[in-house]
Length: 384
Image 1: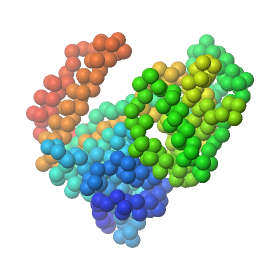
Image 2: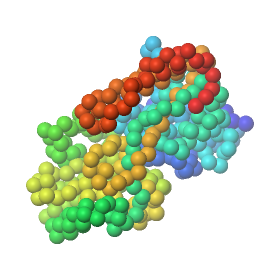
Image 3: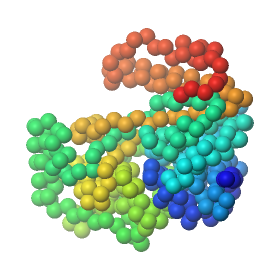
Image 4: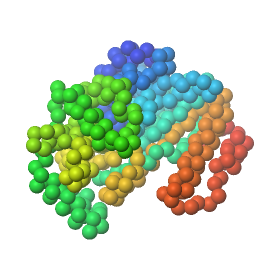
């Protein structure tokens, strides 16, 4: 009782904004990275002409009940990957919670595409809608580990401090008192001021990391254009918040937080290097603000997103592992096995490098290439 179609044109994708937003609101597991504003803006900045493949599932009355925002990466091993790329922390599909058959219908639509290309869904958050498509998949499939994310409960700062050892919590309280004594003021930026605020944020971010290895993409014109296009409508719809921190009337720090009904995630911030000279703990300042806002809005999760930087671990966050879902047909099953084995080999090599630097403890003899042999020797049917 459903029909499927594929959107291959960027302008047509742009015109889907309203019904995409309605489907987003009916998908309880959607994150801000699945909002139309984020995905369409990303495509405008980063997309490859001719590669767009947004799979849509509709009921007979035309109501959109499923969507998979993908793009085709051509080559010897053609692959369909999610829109959003490396600057997106969570990828997913959208499914209407009120339409039980949506997952099966979207899986069937993607199965047609998988005749000639492997489907590789990266950075899938546990419980995501894509896991329902994975459960409905009837061909070869694999679930692999992907990036680690750190999360805290969305509770007031006093409750977060109880997660720390007593001595560390006491030092953090002293840092908070210093922030209050300095008189740093917080201002949530209204929609009309967002473009100028993002420009200031990116400038502060670059200054903050100058000489310390700033992420090159964060200094690019296309990244700035993407944020400016995406964040303004996301602020207006309640999917993003930009906050500036002022001292003596001057903006000394700025933060971009992305939000869904259940989650708030600190995406990017910038801080004046002069704050370090004043011994201001910027991470603590931002976390206090984020915890207060998330708790007040009724959200349950304060996500520190991907990465396990040392400052994040001070708060003893929960570690949540994203997943990588590989989907294929029998014809493309060998591509799945090769890609899965290559991914495992890369993870093993990265772990070995971290062990050599003393970041991780020594481990038993690696089995990555033995697993490659076993994978290549298997039949290509089902299994997770």
